[in-house]
Length: 140
View 1 (cartoon, rainbow, N blue to C red):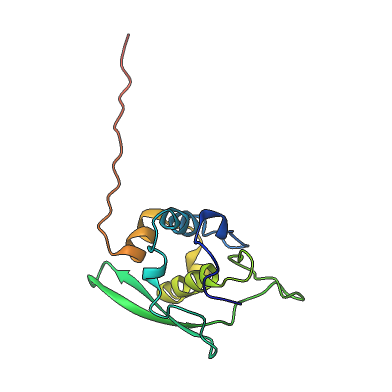
View 2 (cartoon, rainbow, N blue to C red):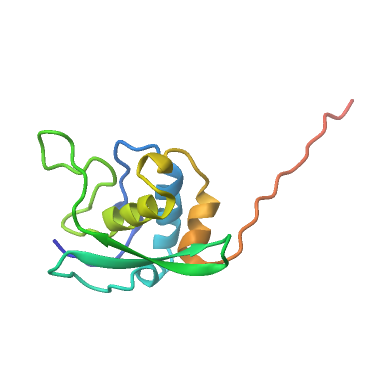
């Protein structure tokens, strides 16, 4: 396995058995910007000890947090298939980033349902906003 293999692209991201499509969407969005995903990883290459450091932004505390995760990934019972995010080939970055988010929020279960904007903010530290258009019925 490798942390990164070749270019980082949207096809590298595949959701597993967890309802974290919002997170997968945020990750896919960042793959469009060269270096954006790599900037989340303080450990920049494969680590033979299996420890990786990811940085995520905590908006409440207004600072980045360093999240240390190992490369032990939950698998589907009776198989060696990852239960949650799936790798493309032999690269681990998607699974490790998802695991870092799970640790950041307390568990994989806590990732079930969320907002892509929050995922983008956590990975970049940028301010985010949601605008809604208030459309009123017009009488004709």
